[in-house]
Image (tube, rainbow, N blue to C red; front, side, top):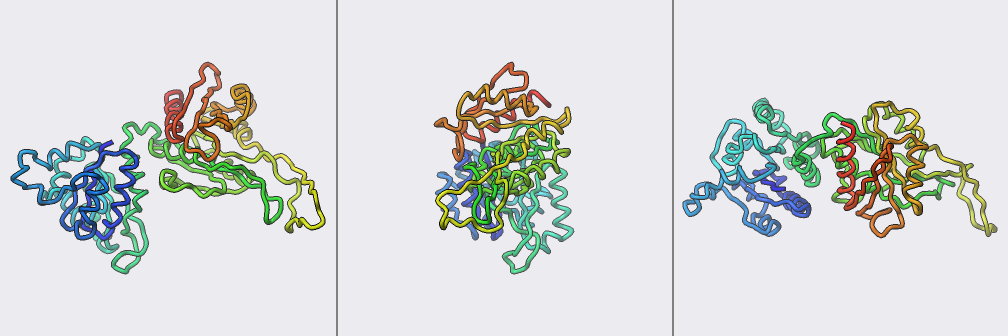
Length: 404
């Protein structure tokens, strides 16, 4: 993917090196256009070093040594996505009214908002943002096809508090990745995903759980969001890994026990078109919760009676409408296909994602997975392997082609 990153003269420009690293890590080809004002806030040398190539400056617009290359035209025609972050009130005004007095405004004018997504990340003082002129200019750009990502509220560089902060680099990265998806084939779809483990407390200090990291479910939620879906993620008690597993962009409902997860799923069930049950829900809980910590003194052995937890997937299978698609997961250690098919039938699933948790590639906490996707017809078993994000995307390819 080719990204043109425009940087204008706001204090938030100091965060842009972090964004460059994220884009490069994701394999993006990157060209950076820096206004002269932006160069006062972030070093052109730092950006060039991170991107391993030159940074384009205002002087390049009318460079007689390079005039035959027409930089602003070539740069406008090159990318798959244009992102301007931070974007000041002055630059927004230039873009809205067709000014072309520096290289970046010339690139934006030449792009025409036609052949690729143009993302604008306004960042400025709250009063400047609220000013009618700025709001009119933002609306002009929105009407012409630009994607305006609203700034966040918080403490601003001027010392005031209000709306005007540029989103964090990982959030900008996600917006760029979403805009770059060629076909938002889940646009208008509501997707409900469960992820992570559950915890069943024995006493105030101890619980039964499992090693689920939540990575697979987060990957399912993230790829659905990038493809245009509205997403709710019901997340068990994990600390999401940094970087790729950002929770930006969708509603996160945090739960702990299987009973809490069931309640959250049922409350959101009518809202969802797709229900993806990727959580590793504990099958059992303590029959009786001990109000005080169980002491080990004078007890060589302790017997704890367990009781069954609710089967969330089966409960959804009973309640779901014909128009809803329910996908379950089967984490198995033996007889993978047969056990998965039995679970698919027993719980009234439409699809099941079966994986061998003892396999070298896949299982708990890994960034890789190897999945057998089985449909209710049993006609075909689709092999999905790669990173958990690649597996999730391939799963959506199958579901979208079958059901939309």
